[in-house]
Amino acid sequence: VGGGRWSHVAPGDTRRTCVRHPLTQRVHREEALNRAIDSVLSSPSPAARRPLAFSVIRVPFLLEPDYDENAPFVESNRERLVKKWGGAVGWERQKARHDLKGRGVEAGIPHFNLDRLAANSMASHRLVQHVGKRYGLRVSEGLYDRLNVYYFVEGHSLNDRERLASVAAETIGNLLLPGEGESEGASSSEAEEGEFAGALPLDPMSEEEVLAFLNGNEGRAEIETALQALQQLGIHGIPKFIIEGRTVVDGAAQSDVFVEIFRDIERRGEVWGGPVFAEILGIDDDVVRRGSHLRPEVDIAA
Image (cartoon, rainbow, N blue to C red; front, side, top):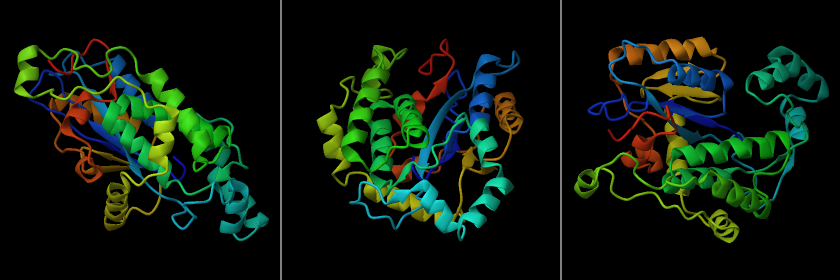
């Protein structure tokens, strides 16, 4: 969201009947990754010991960390890029060199609004993280996708907090399907033992509640720690993907690269590493286990 994110694919609880969540922490919604996830979920290997499910964790990355957090927007993205590349001629060279329009089509965004309003994105990052912790990764993924359209296509500022609060509250309400907050498939005995204790809430955030959150500071410390961790890992650009907490895949990779990695995990029947950013961002194991992408017939609590 506004400046992008990292993504991470990590394992879930392999004691259960499915290989739980190769977790994918990623920055931008990459169509190649989504195609790979859809392919593996829709066509599981008959020889697989356990079906795969996925948990996508968004790791914040700020393209313009020095933007004023109190400004609704700072400049248009066109102005930002022309300035970044030393003028209009340099910017045109960059567009041609990197095939930005073609990359947008591949990412599922055929029309980028070049004059979208660029702003500090800390508040929007905090919101996506909060929604994931409160409602689960499926809902935070849906909000993130909506904000991609809000920013990249519609051109709105991610720090126009009143507008953002309105769009976010509506999106969260639409995403909270009946039962989203319930531990489907968990028996009463499991719940009593605490494995799925603490069902996610079903009540959506109101526009006023979202606005109050955006104007607050909750979640800042975790994001700042995650940004420091990215620096220590030598991550200075996006998009990037971390799979099993160890394999880094560049955002330019095609879907077959991801499919090969996921099929290898499927053959193994277990995931070798966990989500390296979950603890940093304060995401509970239960939220991770619930997942963001899984086959409808897979009972992740079984």
